[in-house]
Length: 75
Image (cartoon, rainbow, N blue to C red):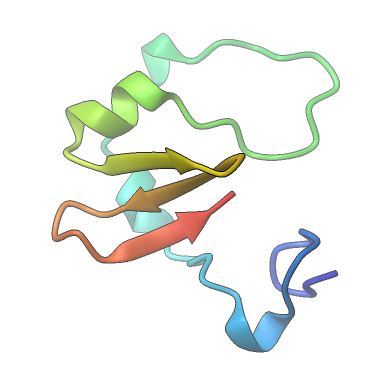
């Protein structure tokens, strides 16, 4: 389990999740839905696409790329 993001499948040394919250400041919070008992961040695919992020679904994984096509995170 990664100590940086609390996810399984990798360790902190190779964790690709950024802790830069500035990328999320432009999201429209009026479009946010409340999900009872959620314990992780919930990203809107529509909002990510509106911000020119690119999502690739392959082999039961979703890899998210930033607008410059650099890998942002993999879920």
